[in-house]
Image 1 (tube, one colour):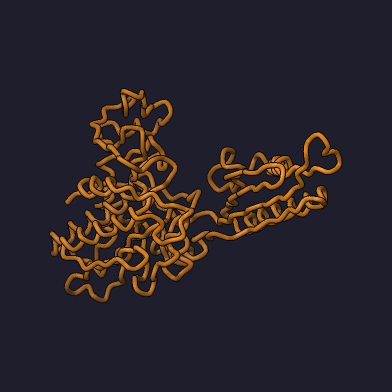
Image 2 (spheres, rainbow, N blue to C red):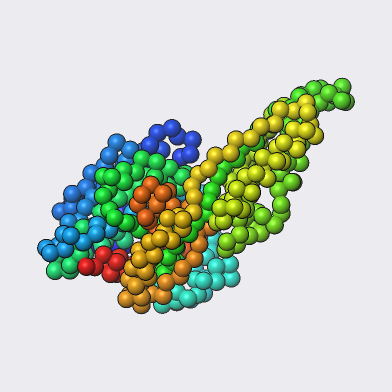
Length: 402
């Protein structure tokens, strides 16, 4: 089967993860998709199982004479973002000749070349899009589908020599839990690649160091008519605190290797308020300084407002996988060579985010990230060129070739 056939099937299952869930996987849709994937692998004669946490593990055995080659892992995640609806996805394939793409005439939703100029370079290709009311789910069902299409090709062409290929599909990557229960020992690969990137050619082995910070402010509520000298308005303190974060270190004012403080949520009232931040930086020293700055601001506000109770919890989420992969550049070179063999020039760049591979690298499984071919992830304007998906299957073939 081609990647498109798998993709059509997989995007029909709503697999948005849920950060408020206490279970793994966090939603039932992911378990449903795990079952479908296992059946598809079984149809190819590939042994695959789902464990108690919803992870799918499978193995494509080495061809004769290649049993002693290193086992290579390929990983993608099954969940999708909750940034836009993942229900009732109406995908279609557009024969793209250039210009704008009308996604939904009734609602006048347009994939505009003016807003998304990179679309112009895909003229002459077939774009997989939605009707503009949901996300597409290419992040990361495109990666899942490309790995399945690779497996289908290899089982149909046993003459193509390759070593052992380990495959895994993880839940809850979008909420930062994709590696929580990943069994590296069971996976038994010497190194791996997540197929979870964007534009064709992306090759990433650097990502942010990441932390989450929650500031809690407890004030004193009083009737406003008799509150002079007594009220301590937690909501106002929270607003003032937010204003202390540097304007040039926000997501909307930074790019490339520049880190940031991102205010994800500010909630509260006079009596109690809370601010939720994520802290990001590629540089370990700057990352530490950003966390210290938050802590210093909390101390300063505690002194300024002694009647308030102000506290902070800072929790590290993941670290820059470059610290591991800088000593395994052979893995990066292997991926770059596979891309060039397929006529794709590698785009080596840092990830302004995270990936399962960052945590897996620190768990003993070196794991850079490869492109899927998709654009505008986590958006109603998400799309992926069909031809780029097929090219990524070819890249994976070259990657595992003996």
